[in-house]
Amino acid sequence: ETGVTQSPTHLIKTRGQQVTLRCSSQSGHNTVSWYQQALGQGPQFIFQYYREEENGRGNFPPRFSGLQFPNYSSELNVNALELDDSALYLCASSSRQATNEKLFFGSGTQLSVL
Amino acid sequence: AQSVTQPDIHITVSEGASLELRCNYSYGATPYLFWYVQSPGQGLQLLLKYFSGDTLVQGIKGFEAEFKRSQSSFNLRKPSVHWSDAAEYFCALGRGSNYKLTFGKGTLLTVNP
Image (cartoon, rainbow over all chains, first blue to last red; front, top):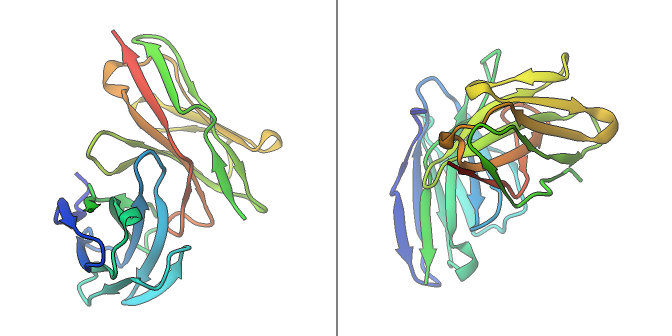
């Protein structure tokens, strides 16, 4: 149990719709990263948020956006869903102040786009 | 550009046998290297990490990995596999411990009784 919780656990959407995924970071963590894991692939870095600002982005289009709130929880928003957006979306939290930093991953949200 | 290659998509071993999962990386500087394990429907759990220093790294659950700069490799080993080790294993590298990890495609481990 990592203390990182994601909701919902499963979601079904249709092409063109918009979706919001949520992540509550582990207590004391101020940094949240989002990853997309397509079937049979390793996770791919989407972006990271630190103190409510985007702090690095992977090779994802602008229709992938995010937010981080003052309590360090985070949302991932995807607009104009495409079939290829079907994947497991993982959230990971960490603390920049930790002397032995590491990522703590949630169990993910499984998104299916029909 | 950085990349991680895990040459073996699927490995099957017998319980009690030794295990080695291969990982090769491409990176222009000294890498931060990680091994994660993922059970079905679960997130990723960190097994071990290498930042610097001793090239043989000990992790949880009896796993170890050896960093070989000359071969750009970071192979994961376990002397005796247990049935509960069946899972998918991912090698990853990054510029820091919590910043933009690049993952390999994973190796699925099956353990036969």
